[in-house]
Amino acid sequence: MFQDKFIFSQLVLFLDRNHFNYLVRKYEGDKYVKHFSCWNQLLALMFGQLSNRESLRDLIVALEAHRSKCYHLGLGSKPIAKTTFATANQNRDYRIFEEFAFYMMDLARRKRIVDIFKLKGHVYAFDSTTIPLCLSVFWWAKFRRKKGGVKIHFLYDLETSVPAYYHITTASVYDSKVMDKIPYEQGSYYVFDRGYNAFKELYRIHMMESYFVVRAKRNLQYKCIKWKRRLPKDVLTDAVIALTKEASMKKYPESPLP
Image 1 (tube, rainbow, N blue to C red):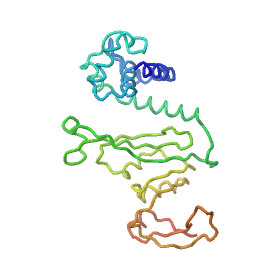
Image 2: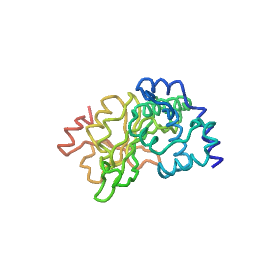
Image 3: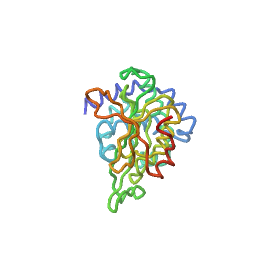
């Protein structure tokens, strides 16, 4: 626990308090608040994540056990009641923390700018991960008959190793349905898994003069138009293809050859 507190105190030093206060004022997060401010809430949530707390009650017990150190960690001098914490999580505007997360992610990316792939644009990977939830508590997150969960969709900057964007949905949302939420950049490269064969969105990337790499499904209907003969040792084949399924052709109407 001592190591967790030390790491936590070092992480807090990197947070831009001025920008966070600006967001709090923007969304009136601390209006009528006397003790448990948005800043205290942010640090408490960070402490719970870092120390691997499994529930709100578990987090409150951990903070109570180290109450004498909470003030120095920025969590305030007064004990945090479970009802106070739960009410803050439920009623405060989530955009305060969302926009601050995006701001810190962008700041981290700019500090770690590298050029590994020697390409003109950024290189991103887009994927998702599912977090299981108790269905009796999170009834709105129904995933299957007896399961609940949320899905976090990540746009990951492969050169800086820092997420560039994220979007949270219920676990029942298909991965390809979130592709329209991605803040695409002109000239960048996007890597997708097999679950993102959404030709309408892929064509949108193409029209933005960006590039994509996606694993093809086994039932992809296409025909080869032209093959490249001289290939590097690690490349099995390189060919220009044309989609043959009518529905796919309507969503991706680009002609393979001029």
